[in-house]
Structure formats: C-alpha cells, structure tokens
Length: 112
Length: 114
Image 1 (cartoon, helix red, strand yellow):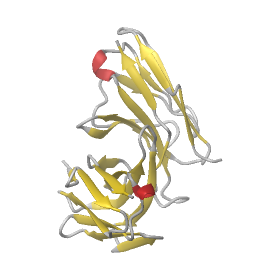
Image 2 (cartoon, one colour; image 1 turned 45 degrees about the vertical axis):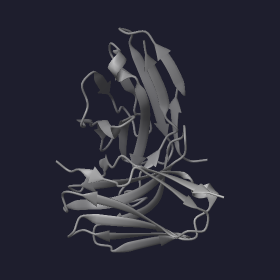
Image 3 (cartoon, each protein chain N blue to C red; image 1 turned 135 degrees about the vertical axis):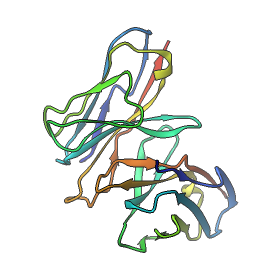
C-alpha cells in the first residue's frame, strides 16, 4: 500500500527565506506527483504536477523535483512571502490511474 | 469560471438521516473523485469514477454510495449518517488528456453528524 509522508508537519519562518518542503513515498511505481496548496477553510489548488518521466517542474517562485528511485520529491519556494502561508500537500497517483494518495500536509507560516 | 461546484457548503445532519452531497464540473473531465479530510488522517479517497457510467471504491467506501449518470455530475450519498462521517468532503476531477492528470478540487462540504 502506497504511503506518503511529509515532515515536518509545520514550519514557521521569517519572510524572505528560501524554503524546501519534503515529500517521500514508499512505492516508486507512480504515475505522477502533485503538490497542492490549501488555505484555511478552502479547497485544494494544484501548484505543480510532475509526470513519472520528468525530473522537475517550475512555476514562478516554485520548483518541484522528483526522484522516483529514492521515493522523494521536494518543493522549493524562493524568497518566501507572508502570502505563501498555507498548508502544502503532496500526492501521488499510481497504475495509470489519477486516484491520489496524499501526505498529511505541512502547515507553513511565513512571518513578516 | 470553469471548475467544480459542491453543494451544500455546510450541513448539520441528524444521525440516521439520508443525505446527498452534490458535485458538478464544467471542464468535461472524464474522472471524478470524492475525498474526505479529517484532522490527523489527511485526505482519503471514498469513491471514484473513471468515466460516465462507471464507479469504483476507494480507501474508505463503507456507508457511502455514488453514481455517475453523466460526465458533469457525481453525487455522493450517505444512506444513514453516523457521527464518524463528520468530516469535510471534497469532490475533484481530472483528465489525462486535457489537463495531463492535474486534479481540480471543489471548495468542500463541511458535514457534521449529530
């Protein structure tokens, strides 16, 4: 059974820091990996999607990398801002399906 | 604005009552999903549908049923609600062709069973 882990569960940093969020998964036979953002009381917004054949994806200040063989992904946030405060979730899909298995998320607080 | 619409936004329900959570998407995605989100447990898949007319069970399907009569709608029914079904429910959709498998989520339904 696929398990996805995000450590730590919470992180508080001052504004301007470059951040690395970690995600690990137990079964390397994934279809894709997605990083999501969730604001309090809201739904999930997909930030980046990495197909199993890809190594990284970039969008603005965000960069996500994927190392399938080691079962790891990182989300890099450059020059963090208070508006980046949210919960970030990692999820993987398997077997040609798009059903997602989620990590429990990491709550990020960026202090002005 | 294209996306997923869930209704109701929140509901307090007496135990034993039947309830249907509604979900509609306007992106013509083939696949749709229902997840529940619980503190400490994260998001877990309840049921899914890869295409209209088909459904499948996820990780936590007991006590729930779904139908997929057309591409746009994917209602989730609680036949006889129990307090353990208190949760935030999210509907999602994806399509491997039009959006490369990227998942889109609704805003959620907060359900309290008392």
